[in-house]
Every structure is written in structure tokens, then in C-alpha cells.
Image (cartoon, rainbow, N blue to C red):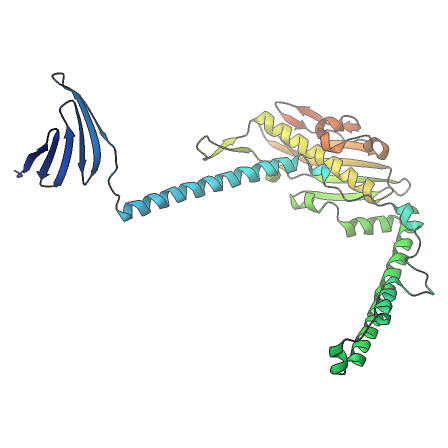
Length: 356
């Protein structure tokens, strides 16, 4: 049985001084309303005499141990880090989905081979080039400083400037050689040299980012017409997400299965965006009039999955010029070209025959 001790002293009307085993406290007020102060904080209590109804509220919290404060700080820090990580994952997911439907917008600049073929040389061969002229002007305008004269560095400075002339001559020779090579290449391109077409395409490598997503691009130029046939093999299972990432109201990461209809639509948009991108790249870098693109990918059914042609489309240069690529729905845009594509909202893309 524990021993208890409590003693209360009246200090003034309505003010009492209390002494107990756990310390001392002061209370102000009567039975109806009382304010108490102790080492554990300040509290206020109210009651209705004769009813048994009372209310007590602690107005100040007790001092926390440093260990508790540090623990709560680390807990809060961990919570904030998790929220930041969740935001990053959702932002990365949204950017990936946006990228899948805008592949067609990342295209190389248009090359005007006719303009290159008729371009003037950077300077006349029998005259000095622009880099040499700049250095010679620097040599002619050179004025020795007092320090140069004092330390006999005038001749050394001149020799350094004259050496820069030799470097400038080499730069001008490279500039002229580059113009000559571009002139030769442009004429081969415009003459329809298929080997040069292929070398240029491989050199520019316009489908690098599509292939980085796991797809394969192969092409063959027509020997008689300014056209190209492309086979694009889409690896959709590794590229198109099957989950939807979002944030809850409390900032936590939520991951749910993507609805089949949404997945099928996203897959179709990605396939069509890639097809348009391929055509735009060939029209940008070569004087080609027509691209025929056969897209192969996976078709998933309830029973199994098959791999085959899911889109075949023929695009002409003049038809592409009528499109505003920043504001198009790629799946709808494909409908404006000669194409074969079968899409069902509940089953997705189906196998089709190649356009002939």
C-alpha cells in the first residue's frame, strides 16, 4: 500500500498553495472555476456544483525529453522525405506518359539540300579566309606595352601572333573543305543516290530515342521512286505502363492497375505517334515524297498474345505539311492517311494486313 501526502494552505481569498509528493502547485478560484499551476503546466477546471459535471483543460504541455523531441523530429523528416519521393515518382510517371504521346514532336531540323547545293563558298580560294583576316588585323594593330618593351618581349609577342596566322589558315582550310564536302553530298542526295541516303540516315541516327525505348527501326529505299519503306517493331510491354501512379490527399504514393480501356488508348496513341515521327524524320533529312510504315507489336487477348502488324500507313510529304503537330491527336491524325488499323476500345489494336 503506497503512502500519499498532500497539504493545502490558504494564502489569500481564492488562492491556495498545495504541497504533495510530486511537488508544489498553486490554485486560484473556487469550486465553479479554478486555475492551477504546477511543474507539469497550467490547467483550468470548471464545474457545476451539485451536478457532478466538470471540465478540465491543460493549457501548457510539459517539457519533452530531448530523446522524444529528436525522435519526433526524425519521424517528421522521414515523413517529408517520403512525400517528396512520392511526388518525384508521380512526376516521373506523368512525364513518361506525356513523352509516349508526343514522340512525333521531337524531330530534326529540316535540311534544305537545294540551298546547300547552290550555296556560295565561304571565301574565294585565291584569297585569304575570314579567320586569317581576323588574326592579321590583330597583328597589324598590335602595339607593344611598356612591360613588353621593358622585358624585351616585343619580338616574342609578334612571333606568337604570327603562329596564330598558321592556325587560322588551317581553320579556313577546314571551313572550305566542309563547304566542298557539303556541296558534293547535296548533289548526291538530290540525284537520289540511295547509298548516300542510307549513310546520311545512319549518320544522323534520327530514331535513337525510339530505339532507346526498346523499339527497332529498319528501312529500305525504293530503287525507282523517292520513297522509303520502314518496319517499326514496338516493344509495348516494356514501354507502356500498366499501372497508374498518383498522390493521395495525405501525399502518399498510390499505385493502381490501369483500366484496360485507358491502357489500349495509350498504346494506340504511342504507336501512332512513333509512326508520324518516323515519317517526319525522313521528310526532314531527305528529299523523299512518300514513307510507308509498317508497325509491328504485341496484341493481347484473353487467351494469349500475338505479335504482328498492328498499323500500316502511307504518308505523303504534302499531306504532312497540312498538320499542326503540337495540337494533334495522333490516333485521329493517322485516319487522314492511307492506312490499315483496327482498334476496339475494349480489346485494343488487332492484327491487320500491310498497306500495299
